[in-house]
Length: 134
Image (cartoon, rainbow, N blue to C red; front, side):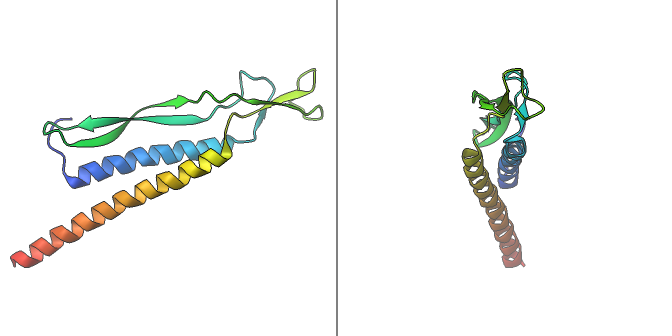
């Protein structure tokens, strides 16, 4: 990071990271319960990896380092009537824990809203300071 960060930079970057987290959660939920003809092709949930980012003064915020695939294994199900079933009648359901994804979505929404509130408070304080200076 090049220069010093202000409150809007810090909250904005946190909001951006949380937006990435929310997008991966939406992708995971959209792919939940989809079936595949083999285990290798089956969808596995995605997770963003966050890292702390510092400016020259040591002020910290968050960045998304990467988005990785989870270790959750697809679920093998016997469904011989499914057109994707293999010769033994099995399909593989996407490796997504829907309950955990919903919890993640709620937590992410709260973090995002907290940063919106930080920005609103900073804006109010700046406007009040300007008003007092007049």
